Length: 107
Image 1 (cartoon, one colour):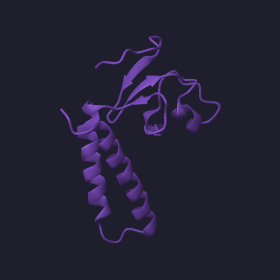
Image 2 (tube, one colour):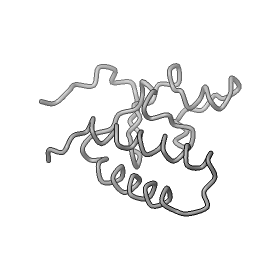
Image 3 (cartoon, helix red, strand yellow):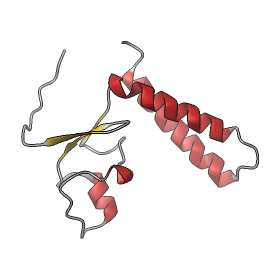
Image 4 (cartoon, helix red, strand yellow):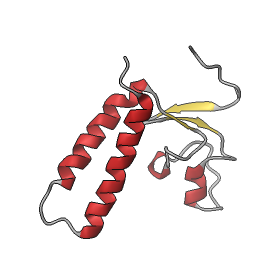
């Protein structure tokens, strides 16, 4: 079943692991960048795709999430990582696994 875009005034910005239905008033990326930020488009480098109300990911993003998960798992298996690096990778791995579970395995 397809969903209708409720706010047709929003612009859609496709991304690698998520798309952004950009609304500057609610964009977490702009809040992270600081109160002086008045961008008219998303800052994907600051994107918190799990929490931002503008963020959307779907089946088309599955391959990118899977690749990112595989890379994080490979990094996690490297010897000589600090405790902080391992913890950070564990958090990222959990986020990617959660996103993949939310997307599901159906084609």
